[in-house]
Amino acid sequence: MNGYFNKVSGKDVEFYEKLLGSKNLSISEEELVTNSIDAYPGMFYKPEIVLWPETSEQVSSILRYSYDRLIPVYLRGGGTGLTGTVPIYGGVLINLVKMNKILTVYEEDMQVVVQPGIVYNTLNKELEKYDLFFPPDPSSGSVCTIGGMVASNASGLKAVKYGTTKDYVLGLEVVLPDGKIVKLGSRTFKYSTGFDLLKMMVGSQGTLGVFTEITLRLKHLPEYIETGVAFFPSIERAVKTVYQIIRNGIDVAAIEFIDEQMIKVVSEFKKLQLPESKAMLLIEAHGTEASVSETMKRCVRIMKDNEAVEIRVAKDIEEREKLWAARKGAYPATLRLGKYMIISDVVVPISKLLDAVLNSYEIGRKYGIEVQVIGHFGDGNLHVHWTSRDDKEKIGLLHQANEMLAKWVIEVGGSVSGEHGIGVEKKKFMKIQHGEAYKMMLDVKRLLDPRCILSPGIIFDLEEVVH
Image: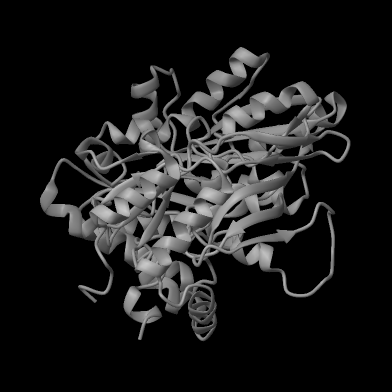
């Protein structure tokens, strides 16, 4: 639908500048390019102007004006998204990083109200003084924003115990596409008052509204933590260990899987002395010292029963951080392999984990590309790294491999996204994943944003929304 939207004019720039001040907008080439990409490869779309609002009222005015003028609006936080949430149709890019304050800490209620631009690690650092923390633990925690986490329903390394972002969002202040400001949710941990519009917004990736205030429930910092790693002679033994830990109800905070190929890549990148093995599991337990010690003993017994060739349990914080370095170094390590890489984010029933890993390898062989598999195996979440190193001719094969795996995942009852969201990358799978329910999602989008000015092309194609 070329020509559907209006371009940003000189008059539009004047309006935005009067609203925000000259320091909070830019049309410089440098800023336009910087805000044209996220962490998904191959998606480069420049906005026409970048805005940095500082208040909900400013966001409301931007959207109201842009809605009336039929100018597309896109949102940005830390720019760490892996599915392509970029300004496909140009227009306005609202960068929310200046809305980065902690507004209120309700210590007794174990809750916090924040603006969307605060960085995950920054928030948790501030919450330490209250012995509280926000549990979802994405690998990009040093740079990703809370608004982005809510928009994609992010999770991460501790989801097997603590769940995902949606489990902690109690309330939202949302600016709708036409500029209306609404409050959703409550500061109570339960309510039964009609449709749960709050949960509908979580994971909507900037297609239904802009989050300007976020109320989160928190957890008490664990009294004691213990971390261990085990190396296995086969993927089958490692996956069986995961299944037995989960099936026996052992209360672990994390079960992370790294395959042989990724172990080698990370060992070289992080200068770690990791033994040669087909698979590695990293397991962590949180709780009292007595409960954690018992949990780790039970896990070690299961590891030994499954012929782990080596088991290490960290003796202190420094050693624990070294063990985590292997897992957290996976993404930057694979970036060093070359320019061209796609990371899948699929989830399967626990019983299908082994099939998912082996199928990924088979698909890689079919298309002649490299494959490394890591994942949050405690909740069935795999991240398959497809790479052609610096071979540009094979970019299409990366996408074909990713698509083949995604379709198989849906067939076995899984999901094409566990924590990265949909964006541009996975919207082709939405109809397959949801069937008739996809039409209901489209109806919601049309109801809240009939002119489709908010993040057009992200999750939904413009042509589907606007007839």
